[in-house]
Amino acid sequence: MPTWSRPQSEPRTGAVAQAGTGYGEPADLDAGPPRPRVAVPVRRSAERTTGARTEQPPVPRPEFAVRLLPSWRLTRNQVDVDVPGPAQRLIALLALNGPHNRSFLAGTLWPERSDAQAYANLRSALSRLATRDVGVVQVSRQMLALAPSVSVDVHDLVQAAESILYGGSDEPPDTAEILRLLHVGDLLCGWYEDWVLTARERLRQLRLHALEAASGRLADAGRYVEALDTAMVCAHIDPLRESAHRSIIRVHLLERNHTEAIRQFRRYRDLLRAELDIEPSPEIRRLLRAVDD
Image (cartoon, rainbow, N blue to C red; front, side, top):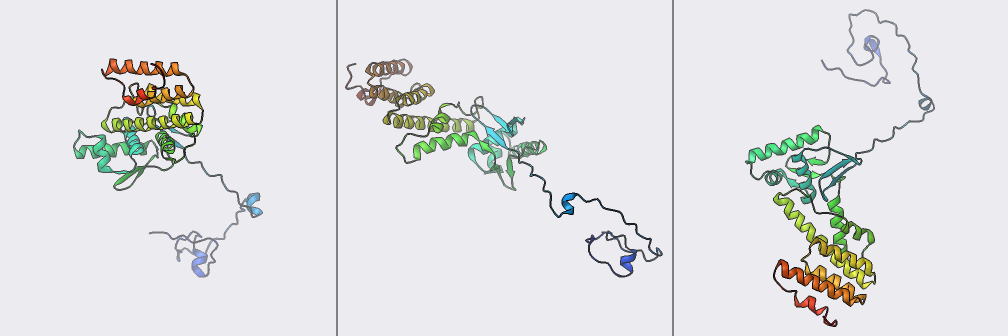
């Protein structure tokens, strides 16, 4: 039978109060006269005696961070967390594409499997995360999402790039934003799934355009060293990218380094001829119209 609890401070009256145990058990009316109770002294702390309440400090929530540049890494409170491969890919997919339903996630992660097998693999990945107490995925009946408290390095990179491209200011970008764009690698090196390749190329193009825009604004502000370094990083990322070489040549010309500008043009022209058997565009040649080639 269920026992019903009652606050000990509640007054008791009648035979039930005398025969009860004091914890809500029903009285045994045939048990005879009640036994005398022995008062047990209760030790109270000084805080409780004086009415003060001692509050325990809150337990800090674990701080998870997902790193996808240049390779996979998950940390909890700055300590590496070991996660199985399927769970790694699930977390990475959610980090890159945002919340999605289970059908999309299962089909994307296991495209060669049947629907039943893909769903089973997804459940297994979620179960392994739960078993390891890695609370980075929010689970509902149909949707999965990365927990809002989880930081993702790709999100920081995209925010920096979009701030430069869409910030609506002609002023040079913040130095921290430029450094964030300069010192990163490709997305998830060593992963070759289609969804990774698509995200990698999109992020690479976003980064290149942001760096070129930053180089132009830095050059306009007379910060030629930073402008040149930023443009040269673009050319290093994509050696055949003409807009990156135009940025380099422009900075050299603004500094009146005509020889350097011509040398850069010839280097790019020779590279195009060797790799693609084509000539530079008229646009890049127009940059040098005031310089005797």
